[in-house]
Each structure stands twice: as C-alpha cells, then as structure tokens.
Amino acid sequence: MRLHKGKLSLAEIALFGVLGALTFGAKVAMSGLPNIEPVSLMVMLMAVVFGWKALYPVYLYVLMEVLLYGINLWNINYLYVWTLLAVAAILMRRLRNPLWWALLSGVFGMAFGLLCAPVYIAIGGVDYALRWWLSGIVFDIPHAIGNFVIALLLFAPLRTLLQRLYARMRK
Image (cartoon, helix red, strand yellow):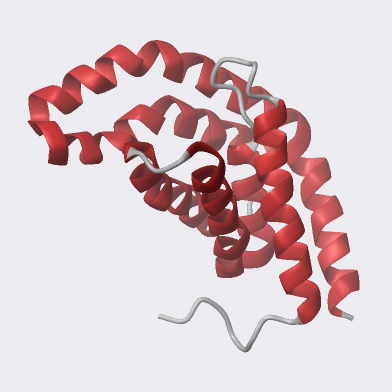
C-alpha cells in the first residue's frame, strides 16, 4: 500500500519536519498538565489536511519521543495508537463541524488506555492488561476532557490555517 502518490517535495519534507517538531515541542510545553496534550489535535489536523502523508510528521514526533525519553513499552503503543487516530480522522475528513472533531478527540483520550492494553496483554496476560487499564482510567478522564476542549476551540481555525498554508506551498 502506497502512502501517497509521487514523492515528497522539498517543501513537504520541510513542512512535515516542522510539524513533527512542533507537535513534540507543544507536548513538552504542556507536560506539566496531567494528560492534557496537543498531540491528538495535531494528528487529526495533519491527517485531515495531508491524508496518508500525515504519517511522516506523526512518526517524526514518535521518534523525538523515543530520543528524549528512551525506549519503553509505551513506544510500541505510540507506533499504532497515533495511526489509529489518523485513520479515523482521514475517514472523517469531510466533516466540518468542530463538535465532531472534539468528540473524536475526547473519545480517543478516554480510550487511550484501552488502546494501549494489547501491549500489556502480550507481556502480562489479559488480567494484567485489564488491571493496568482500569487503574489508568483516572488519567484517561482528564485526557478526554482536555482533548475535547482543545479540539473544540482550535480544530476549525487551525484546519483552515493549515489548509491555506499547504495550498500556497503546493503552488
């Protein structure tokens, strides 16, 4: 399966590098807030505007996480959970109402621990994964609320901005 038609332009490589780094920097800047992060918003925006090409800046973000924080089990989770969100956003890309995007982001935040559970099933079994997930729901709740609010306020204006930037860049 090809990610896109043709090769990336130099401008796309530069843009995707900046967006991957911006996503990482924004997360680090907000790291003092409990499970409230801009990554979900950025993944949705990039998926809607760039389609499958969004995986380039998404995986650059994941690489930067590994470089700063090291290798651990959550790295495996990041390899697929952000892709799942990108796929959902690509499938919903025609929707314009910010409420739908806020709902997707909020549901993703609430489901984040559950989405990570397969890795814990592999290392400790179903009981271990279930206990891990249930103990983490208290962290998923602020994640869901934060994602919902951030997407509700910022998705529409940032989508317009990113679409205009990308359209100008491609001319």
